Image 1: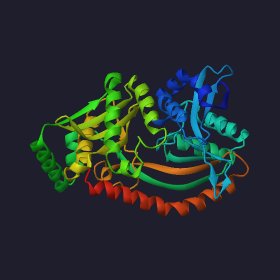
Image 2: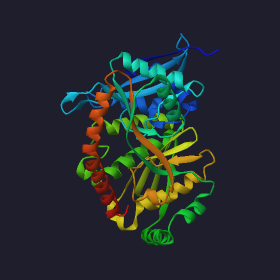
Image 3: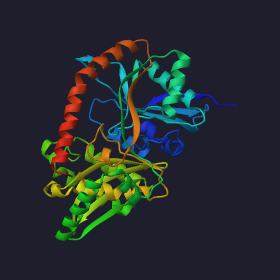
Image 4: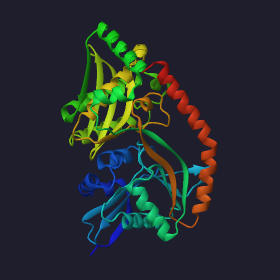
Length: 382
């Protein structure tokens, strides 16, 4: 006999009191999501800019709240055309995966309880900006929506680069990378090696991760993101969030930072999170003065082999933008994600209409910005 499922919206401090049960759920959830692990989500909620209204929708099995059965961090969507919108978004400070953590035995009752909790709080719609489309959680959500006559609106979607192959690293890259580009990468690696000792390493564990975080922050701040003021050191709360989350993740060996160095100088770095048997290539940066040697691409080649050769990992999500000019040509599998609105109140259609209008207005701007950022990265050939 299944125990009843209850859900409540908690502030970050109250949610942190259930961190142990939250962690247990993250390890066995229907689908993994490292950005909703307690180490990442709680740090993100603590460092959110003012006015974002961060909270955690938490579900339990049974009346005593002893077993956490569902986790959904949420933030307020804010205003649309100067009008406050009664909707929330799945997410916290950072992360391009919106899939909630659900008990694998009762995903639909857990989702129902969490949506009902949001509805009682006056939320009219829940936005999943990056839901794994067609995945187990999305299928459970679809059954719940169909069975209860709820509204659903798909705003946008794409397939992003994904790594899933039985091949070892060297064989995979021979199979997926164009011969011309592979030879070019070999040539660039030789040229760098002529300048000094080229070394790839992966920082792991509480002794190595804090220093590697600072390497990443310094390298990113020295590039075009630093010049534009969009690097993690400059963005309000971002560096503090990364340091806190990384330190906690390192205790569980759930974060890796890949570093490519020329002699003692780091020339490229990449942040990788892990959840269950999947890796997530969260961020990368490189030394732009060496851009003609594509240090970011060389780092990604080494990291790809590292991930494929790790028996503890079955796949890796690039969490990249659509049509990314670097990772898309190397990781040839695709992970479908969609921007989805789900009804939690009677004014859902008004919210969905406003979001569709907004999406039409910003889609061209967003894609133009993505193309510009990708061009800036490709220009330095990092």
